Length: 102
Image (cartoon, rainbow, N blue to C red; front, side):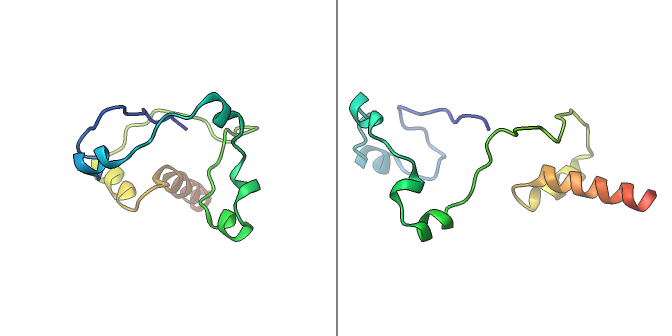
């Protein structure tokens, strides 16, 4: 997963106003505060932690291969229109096509 760029100055177009940005007092954490951080699993009640969206880390043994592929614009837009996971849906569609073919 790509790390997000941290913004130190207001940039419009991110869903909040300049006034919202200015109203937040969010000083950087000290070295001591960073050293005392604990994983969410340890500090949140299980029902809240289990309700959080799960994010996958790097694959231990990669099962897929990154490739570059040219697709028709309308095909790509149709897959993307259904939201996140469009790459996996393309993979599933291709896999189903292989099963039908063979």
